Amino acid sequence: MNYIDYIIIVVYLLAFIGIGFFFKENNNSKDYFLGGQSMGWFPLSLSTMATQLSAISFISAPAFVGLKEGGGLQWLTYEFGVPLAMAFLLIAIIPTLYNSGIVSVYEYLEKRFDASSRLLISFVFQISRSVATGVMVYTMALILQATVGIEFWISVLLIGVITMIYSFQGGMKAVIWGDVIQMCILFFGIIVCLVYGISELGGFENFLTHVDKDRLTAVDFSKWGFNNADKNDEFGFWPMVIGGFFLYASYYGTDQTQSQRLLSAKGMPTIKKLLLANGLLRFPITLTYCVMGLVLGTLLLQDVGFQELMESVYQSNIGSLEGKKADLMVPVFIIKYLPNGIIGILIVAIMSAAMSSLSSTVNSLSAVSLEDFIKRFKPNMTDKQYVMNSRLLSVFWGVVCLFFAFFAGSIEGTVIEVINKISSIFYGPILAAFILAILTKKTHALGANIGIVAGVAFNMYLWLYVPEIFWFWWNAIGCLVTIVVAYGVSLLIKREANQGLPVTFYKGGKKEVAVLLGFFVLIVVVAYSVHSFFA
Image (cartoon, rainbow, N blue to C red; front, side, top):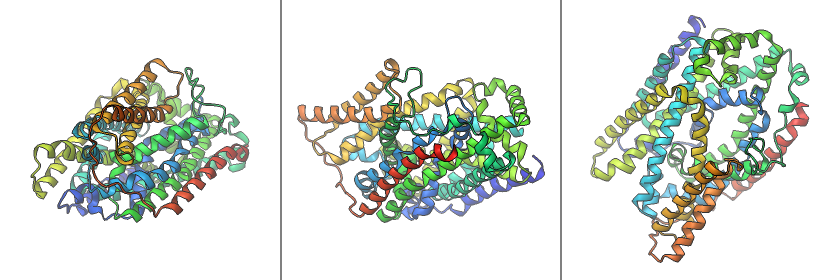
């Protein structure tokens, strides 16, 4: 790196402070947390994808595809459940949540059941999301330190403090428009790495000649995920489609970081376009960075200098990067092969990956803390007090996430996998709670709470005692167990069920649902055929 790269980084960080100042006018809760419900589908779509296209997508996913043992294009199967989940949410879940006028998505559970369901799920969300985001910031800061020499603590503070400043000032509008910029930078970074990688290989034909053919299989119908004790039964078609449907329906519909964007839309027509865009655009983006991973992995095997530099960086930081050697592939490629100026932009892309996730987390955590907990004890806050408390909470949660980033330390290597499994333990039962709340009339609060506990407990049992079942299945199993138990208890124990708010089904999305279902078939065919194309 030289002065050009550092100038680019400084200008980028100052620009984001300016974004916060530009959107500093926030007069009430809907302004600060929902952007005044004035956001269009395009910025909301890019913001949603920026949160998804995080450090994992830019750094770890290409490394998995191109380098890690057991990796390859099977990463594409993560996308199979997305269009199906978008279709389900558009018709059955989101219209009711949007029309309920809530800020925290968990508020709906209290309106339909009682406060205990809302507070429990909200608390779990706050703890798990802050830890996961802290670990992500930690990992990115570590990689920046190892590859470009920016001290770990400086990286953490730069990412954290700048994000807190523009989130503090601008609220949801600043977060969304910041994500739009970060999404564009990230995708630009992926394209640049892909183009330069193919150029260094001597062209696309040479890439096809040397690519590892074992990494080209994306779809495997023979793996069911029920014999996974040795992790050789992962990424099968059925667990990734069925488990993925429940995971993404829960993530996009009931996770505050994503549902808050849906609640920020102008109206249901905007949400319709937003969900359609998410269902259609994620796969092409994922395919692009997967191909980038194949290209860089192939280049690494062909270029001894690339191997030596990556090994040198790893050995110099083995205490902190142990077990993460493959994750160095993209950042080492950037500093070895790209010209100054472009290096600065792509370092900004890595920082963008961390900042987009952190800003979304901070805003969402402050929203649920204020709506689910503080307003319970201070229901008569003025709009001015509300906005000030919102801003203070955004700082608080930013500090909490940075705390986890500084102290992730040696446990980080196992935390990523643990967090993914913990999410899958809860995602299914949480989705079930909303399905029961919106789509059933007889389920009462006691039944719902018992069902949620049963679903979570059963998933924990699978984790501890049935390692043969692939964790992606937990999303589906936990949801179904929760629904069966909750509805059964509600039928056996007679109690009056609170009907909550009116249920709304969106009847204007039939065309979009048909498109999403057709697109699901298309991406399965494309993923299945990709082996033949590259081979």
